[in-house]
Length: 478
Image (cartoon, rainbow, N blue to C red; front, side, top):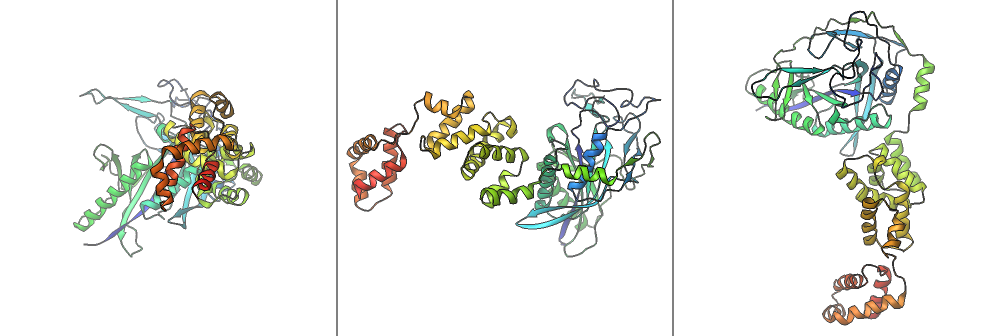
């Protein structure tokens, strides 16, 4: 049996975070009632003329620069002609002959090694509408919602430079991170703002010749992409080993069946009959505009990660985790700026804060405990006013009530007790009540010491200073 390996490329559609559509003033707000954010332009009415959204062009330039693309001084829009019910003009305005971003690259990290994925192009286009299929048994009708029609999209087309699921995951995560960092999209996959199309072929292991490419649509999550990749690699490999041939076609992912299915129309050769859109002028992108956009780009993840290691003396792991999201990175720096010790803030963020963000499905900017509040909590621990266990209680109460950590500590009487005579009294009572543990320690079984510490903390209702408890116990039992 011949062994095959996969060859992977991506076409990624990114909905831009503009307030209005690409060629008209209709809102791009998600979730509005069907067909309430439309006008004669995005409905494709005769006699209407489009006006280009400058911010959409600028977002495309930002993306092209962030992906190391060459940006020609002139680009234009073309009509991509095909019929589908959600395309009111029977053509899509896109870019084919003179594209905004060309020949870029994106570095990904896989198993500790850096791998470069070439970017074929970054181009700007308009989105189509949405078909809403009936869920009534026996009813095969569909309704059309054109709210999304005309929403500005960029399509990012990679070269087939990936070969494994790990490559694909690294590419998707790195690209999503960059798009969020440069603030061209929030990349919300649940709302369709980031959509992946997978181009996959297989070839014999050890050969360079590419196999027949299959394009797969309807991938609405990274997890779905991975399931699809695994299935399609096996399907194509088994087909070739059985003496069949892979067809160049577009397939859809069937989530219920966990498999790909061929679309009814095979697309062996695309014939979209592209031609320049006569209603739209050429886009002039002078060097001054390109440099202005370049200067406005924020610090990207890799640079921020290196800076966190150098500036805050964080371990590589911490820096990488904190910079995976621009919002989380900003939260961290704000907490440090408010007086929190960098490593202590990092520890809390990578455990309690990130866990809460994931469970609540919210961004760092929406988190109830603001950065200054986390810095305050860390300061209470560092100053010895509360211990780590109490701090977790205070953290939870802060999220419940919205009160400041110091306020909760004072209201609930949680301040740690450092009075040695008071702590020694609790230690003496504990020793008297745990003669067996004392005997074990004196016999050399030091593990019993931690049990005694726990008993003292319990007796003090968590208020005793743990360091002082350990010191007094060691002195009395040494």
